Length: 327
Image 1: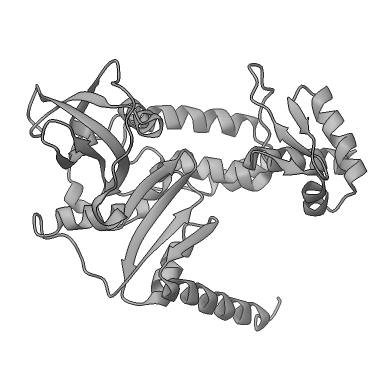
Image 2 (image 1 turned 135 degrees about the vertical axis):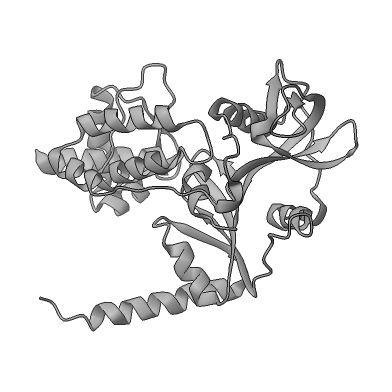
């Protein structure tokens, strides 16, 4: 029975990571037969999960969106990753109280073994010195901006000229990206009144409702968000570092979890669970090792030197593991 329950948990975990799966792919990933996959799908339906089947050469399954989804199940690694993300999500935003309450709720329902692992992870996210005592970005504002970006809706908001201003000037923009730079959140957008690209500090934005009409996104000059943001700040505050080795990766973590530890890198939000990180270092191997500290799946965008560095680092770690004498 325990083996079946573990398999159902693993199956549900796979269904939550991707829109659809073929029966053969699920059977191969779990090391079972397609017939067992079909039986397990029936068990999940009996538990109330909206499992949808679709036709095809080998058939497939997906977890349908429902109004009454049963409680989500997490395996051990997912539960610990969630606790880690909650501990770091508050930095640079006003999520501290909500994140603390969510973390306490999750801890109460964890089995003792996971509760002990979580209690050993005491993480303090330190904001960069240059960010000082600047106001934090409001979590609701971040959500509103993110929604407008993904739905491609024009935004109207009041924008304060500085940290002491009590009122702001009205702005109309086409929002394109949310990024973090040295501990601050910024909105990259096309300013409709000034007919030019602008960056706005999120902590100075007060959105107005409703949002405007849908728009077709413009092409960003150079086509690269990190390069554009870096060029905008270079020379204005003297903080940009021209690293000899700079690379881009996609991390399987939310931007709020990566931003506190990105140092002088640029974090671009790609969705609720993914972000793009642009980071520099004095060597390619050092850059790969630094990115590896995030302890998540990594997709290298470029350049090829960074791919080679990860391969070299993997070989080095494999050799170290082989040469380790067991106690």
